[in-house]
Amino acid sequence: MGAPEHRKVLLGVSGGIAAYKSCEVVRRLRDAGADVRVVLTQNAERFVTAMTFQALSGQPVLRGLWDAEADMGMGHLELARWADAILIAPASADTLAKLAHGFADDLLSTLCLAATAPLAVAPAMNHRMWLHPATQANVATLRARGAAILGPANGPLAEGESGPGRMLEPQQLVQALMAPGGTHVA
Ligand SMILES: Cc1cc2nc3c(=O)[nH]c(=O)nc-3n(C[C@H](O)[C@H](O)[C@H](O)COP(=O)(O)O)c2cc1C
Image (cartoon, rainbow, N blue to C red; front, side):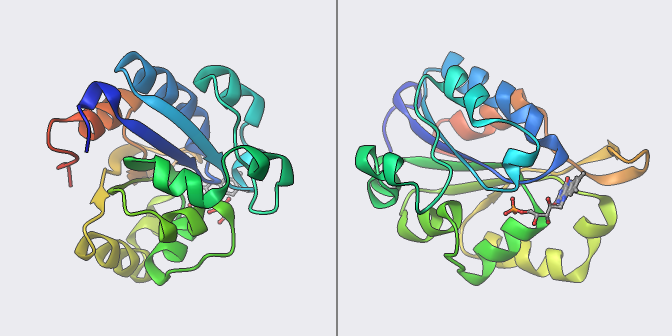
């Protein structure tokens, strides 16, 4: 992996309420000297727009496997090769399940299968979803495979409940990702 200030970071954003915080993640990654490319899942686009991430990253945002226009630029395999770190924030329960089981039915999951770069995920969800044995098993699988699991934090959640499930703050994610030697926060 290159020097932290030159790291090429692929930021995957999945469909959770914390997706709005990922805009700040892009800003902070760029402040830390990273080149950032953003991939949104289709469900992420229900919470945030590609245009916002395009403006913040200064790069086109890839949204789908079958996006012909994007594939004329940097296609999914090239993007997988380009990245020297992958951060998925927020990582929804659904996306964690896909990654744990090796699904490749959308752009983000396909990229993750095709990439050899280290993977970091920042889970964010309702505390019951987080504590469900299925989610815990998926996270254990990813951790055993070498992925860095960043968070979640304990605290107030979007629906007025409280518990483990809050996405870590953008600055915490960026510090963990850009730490010399890679991500070590569990
Ligand atoms: C208002 C709303 C908020 C949601 N927030 C979350 C969330 O914070 N975390 C999560 O894992 N799923 C959340 N979901 C469910 C996901 O959007 C859903 O599981 C979706 O399939 C995730 O798709 P993706 O992982 O491909 O982006 C939410 C759904 C809705 C309607």
